[in-house]
Length: 200
Image 1 (cartoon, rainbow, N blue to C red):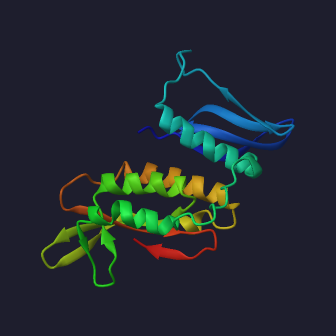
Image 2: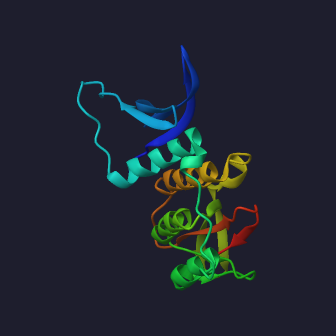
């Protein structure tokens, strides 16, 4: 996965919001809304060549840009009557992947499982509200310095679709940089549109 992210910006002479697409701190393109349509302009790299991104990485960044620029285009549809609860769906698909459970039934998941949960949560209209890394050992779990983020707080006040997309992109960018070792695990919370958080 690349480090492609979307962030709010502006342009001289343009009254509306602009969303920069940034890779490794460098501007690779930007998005803007005009008459209800979201446009994206990609820039060449320093050598004049085209940037190349995995489709899934680019799609996540564009989803975030759309949510920032035109929330009505990125709204999460209401669940159909009788549809399963998104939290039940997440639990049924991922509970068995937990490496262990703590005294309050919180799960400690391998990094790859948390990346999958992050993507699935966004599909279901849930936000990944927080992530925290731990070293697992026989006596319990020890938090890993520098491996914790409250994503829900960082995106508080944003329209729900923007918050969901922003949390997902930020979570994936963080998780890709965290340790990859057998005794490293991640605990996380997801949040529903009411703002209630749930430990997985």
